Length: 318
Image (cartoon, rainbow, N blue to C red; front, side, top):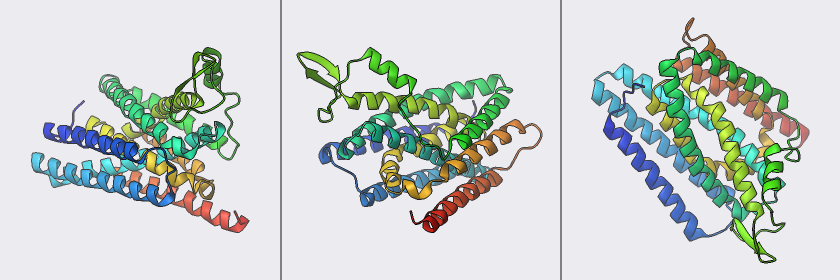
């Protein structure tokens, strides 16, 4: 798993992530349990996006300084940007599932941010492991690209088929299993995951929510990791673009939760993106689609579905 990133940039990346999470947790602790409004969510979303772009600028400078090749630095920087956009886009689907989970369990808005923070930590750890595993597989078994590509195509088709249908957790097997294993209270106990009823320690609904959010992270990591490997096999770019996309997930959730109904066609766009990336992986040995073309296609698909969503919402009066 070769990378153009120097060691000091790896260390800088780790430091940025740790500091970012520390600041987020400190702010979270000082604020206490409170509902995050659209303005606050937009503010934090812009901060995370700006941080990602600044890091990409630092990455370009590091590659240029290390290799002396401006063209290579441009290519690697574009790979990061494309990967970041893809992962950020796929994170939208995570958000819709989180919204469904929170609605199903009637999680009070002022408790949701703690759940999302824990979910973000879990996602970073999980995806780091899966990226290392995926990178090792690609380095030793090139044909795994075709498996990843076919999987993404099937996932995209399945997502397209399910788009527009009312999701439900009633028949979720993981939820049924959790309820069989653990006694669960019918009431929340603040932000606690455990409470005491009739002298017995039992789980709160918030604990069930955490478990389902963790399961969602696993499912979507299986989709998103192959997607980024279609853009680049450089483990540094794969890892950093994933992590920076995840860091802003909490703010993006509260931002999109307020306008989810306006982008009801977005899942169709995400499905099309997955199919496109899957095809890109399957034809890589016949024709390697340029990174700039991939970026243009992804942006065009997402922009079109968002435009059509807003346009149709205005026509129907939603």
